[in-house]
Image (cartoon, rainbow, N blue to C red; front, side, top):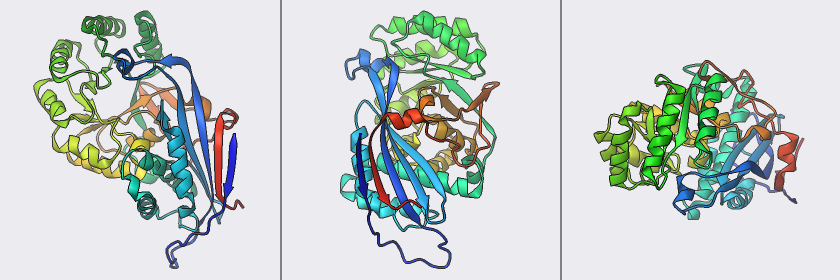
Length: 393
């Protein structure tokens, strides 16, 4: 593990009497989470990616002069983790001396610090970890779960499982995983599709529907691997299964193709997880390309940006189903006015001391302040690099 310490003085904005606290210490950690089993979806079967064996996380821990703390994270699958860490390290000093309550202004400052690398993608994902930590700190300081600080519309959110239905998993095991998830209180099941043999997708889907019954919420995810004609044919073939949605049937940036598909099918179309800014999601919204929008807060710049997108989505009466990172997205979904879904993945559990409660098809907002998470000793052991700025109390 490489440990780097750096102290930077920062010309923060001139404080008024409302500034009661300042950020005094920051620690970044690059943590690599190994996956027990290599994971494959349609992108692997089409030869575009290799099986996923690990997930890289960027953790940010903050402390203020008054002793308030916050933690946030971003992540990258397959590639990009070291790049996120490098960019976060470059801009860390920009936060020192700032009022942690001024989250929107700090986000803009960090974006301008790396303006030459753009307002989407890796650089914005590095900023996301800071942004999440600032919101966590704000809620902790208030003594409230983040959902309550934002203004919750509900104390629990419908949840569905994805991790049991990947294409590398034999059909028999997918059926057992689905039954176990429902028995454990999870509300819906999503399975991966996009096999080169489309008939295999339909056989697999038929088997799952028969196993879970007609009333269980069921979704499919093609991970962008169909072209437009294939998506139309498969969408029509899947209408009979009463799916909650068909996810990412087309390339993530094909807004017009998604719009045409959404208009032609009764089954809702869901997409958005691979987009890396609010502006990119706006293309989906203005083209009427999705019935269900699936933003990922760490990918689009954090909670500040997610809230902007959520307001746009609500205005257009869209359903919301945030992607991955349930530890963050549970709180954000709970604050969305239209009944949402949150995605259950157990992959991140080794990183956190706490567990989320699931029952009766719903994931429950914890009573713990902030996000309600703390890092495990195992997470510390998986740390590959750290960087500190400022001075801890």
